[in-house]
Image (tube, rainbow, N blue to C red; front, side, top):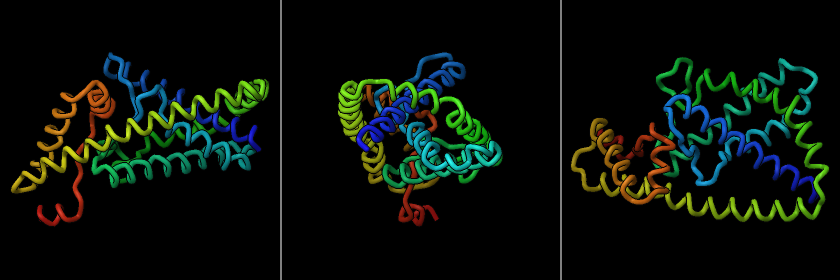
Length: 230
C-alpha cells in the first residue's frame, strides 16, 4: 500500500510539473516572456496533478471506450477547475481567472475552449503517459522512492505555507482599501483591484510573481457589499 501511495504521489508531481510547463509555454507564446504560472512558487501547478490523479482513479473503467473516456475526462476536469475557482474566490475574495469573454462559458469559471483539451488530456493520460510512467516508477528502487517522496512532500508543504500567506495578502489588502472607501460601486471595485495589484507589486518579488501569474485577477465582493451597491 505504501509503495502504491508513493507511486501516485510521484505521478501527482510529474503531472503538476508538466502542467506548469504547459502553462509557461502558453504564456511565453502569448506574451513573449517567461511567467511563473500557478499559485505556488515552485515549478508545478497542482490542479494538473489532481486532475491527473482523478483521471487515473476514476476513468480506468472507460479505458476500452475512447468516446466515453473523452467525455468523462471533460466532465471530471471541468468540475475540478470550476470548484477550484469557486473555493479560491470564496476563501480569498478574488477571481483568479475569468472566461466570461469566451463563448460557452459557465459563470466565467470554465469554458468550451478549455473543456475540449481536458478530454484529449484524459485520453493521453490513460493511453500513453500512465502506462509509461507506472512502468518507469516501478523500476525505481524502493529506498530511492521513499527518499524522493519525503523530500518532495517537505518542499510542497513548505511552498503551500509560504504561498498561502502571500495569497492571503490579496484579501487583506483589498479589505483595508474597501473599509476606507465610503461608496462601493462596480467601477470602484475595478479601481480597488488596480490598487491591490499596485500594492502587491511593491512588496516583494513573490508578490509580484503572483500578480504576473494571474493578470486577470479581480477583487470580488461578498453579499453584504453587494447589498451596498444595490
